[in-house]
Image 1 (cartoon, rainbow, N blue to C red):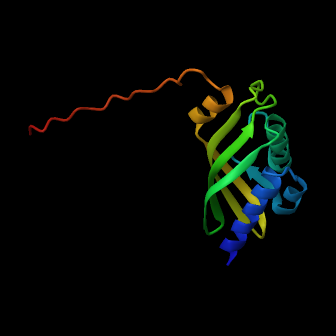
Image 2: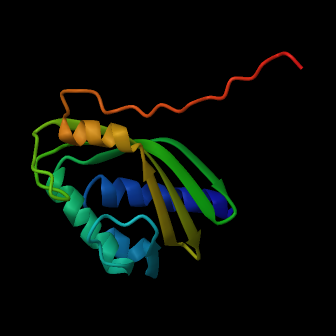
Length: 154
């Protein structure tokens, strides 16, 4: 039964905190001992850090929206795959605004207990994020890996 409750809780966090900027909801559903495993550069630890991170994101992307593509839960962990989208209108991490709409695929893992978000891990596709935020005119460099050749002769 708690799996459905955890999904509802994270969906509320995404809808009301990320997508509408209602940080007071975080006060209700995020643990005071919250641990961020994927902080933004300069983000302070703990519960205050989550509020700081969202203020930085909303400043840079005032129309920020996270669209949930998939959500999976097992035990006390929940995984969300989705798309971060927003217009880059403010400086973030030293990157000046480009005015461009960015779309970044992301995966987030939350650990929950007793109706609260306790921990978060976040991953995004770095080349896609850089391409979007910097609005690069040229392709990012590719990395080639040498693959050993095997002979069929025995």
